[in-house]
Amino acid sequence: MAKKNYSEEFRRDAVALYRDTDGATVAGIAADLGISHGSLTTWLRNAGITIRRPATTAPGPGTGETPEQEAARLRAEVAHLRAEKTKLETERDILRSAAKYFAGGDELVNRFQFVADHSDTYPVKRLCQVIGIARSSYYAWINAGPVRAARAAADSELAEKIRAVHTVDNTYGRPRITAEINHGQPACQRVNHKRIARIMRENNIEGLRLRRRHRTTIAEPADTPSPDLLNRDFTATAPNTRYVGDITYLPCGDNEFLYLATVIDCFSRRLVGWSIADHMRTELVENALEAAARTRGGLAGAVFHADHGSQYTSKGFAMICAKLGVAQSMGAVGTSADNALAESFNATLKRETLQGATSWESPRTARLAVFRWITRYNTRRRHSYCNYLSPTDYENAHTSDSLQQAA
Image 1: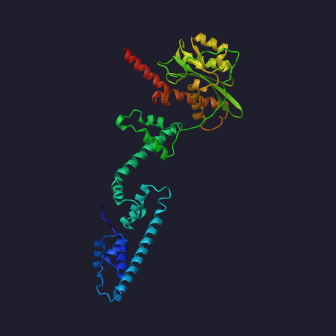
Image 2: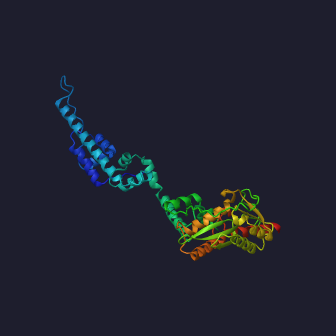
Image 3: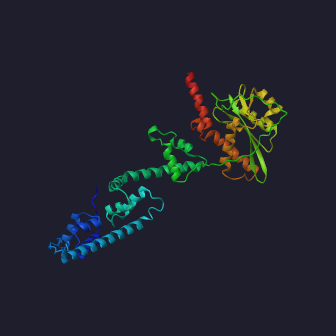
């Protein structure tokens, strides 16, 4: 345990309290001040004060005490009351000083810090008693100071790395930031996701969280729907086998809209085909599917799943699918969960490109923003489904693994 250090002023006041208090004892004054009997005795001797002994005058008949004893008792009671008053005033001053430390929450670390900051003014024992902590806990906290400082420095350095990743893409939340920071690091140097979450919370860093809805699925009762070949299983064992698609709106300026049709590979979540236009005619989804065929070099044998929008149930789209060798699949009417993968992609795209805005300035601005995001999404943006690789990297890794197994 660390040695207690008392200021010279405190020592002088303790000696003066004993000297000026009639009938006071060393034990009584030491107890009131929260110091040891030996310390006060040493201070008194150094100051040249004679330590008083209790009166031994015999009591008078019938009264139980002599006048001298009564006077000594009353003086001792007065001294005790004065000491108690001094003690209460000291506690009041300590609590007043502690108020600003506890303004942000009466946390244990705030109490330790308060004692450390005021240990030169008041005895540590008295400070700990007043604010309700154990001295052993306080000294353990003091001894852990270097470790605590090193951890704070490491957290500050990690916060800068997190901020740098978030600056590049402010839509990244804790999982993607964790994957970005740990990418290429040996296992012994990887950072736990809980630590990153804590530091993000402490530094007010968070990914974008927005929700937006707009109806783009308009069914055509006259057309014949296709069966559901996926049954909400949006996975695939290899690329170019299962696709989902949808149409989403892109708000531009005053009551203007562009429309985006998508073709997404269920294996890697890669957007392999898309089309943007200022209409929702069948050509929009036909162009998207043909773009996917060019990207893959063909779609023969693949399944394409969509909702019951009139574009997907049209004869024109059925002819394109037959031409490309694609089997059509559709979920139930009015059930967004049956095309959840495409719905989720659309929500993410608009959330991360608009970032809370209601629309883009113009159709050209919207087209460029979406094109830029799609390029980043496919090649750089880490996807949770792909073990936090980008869709393109995930497909490349699968191809490498397949070649190694074949060899």
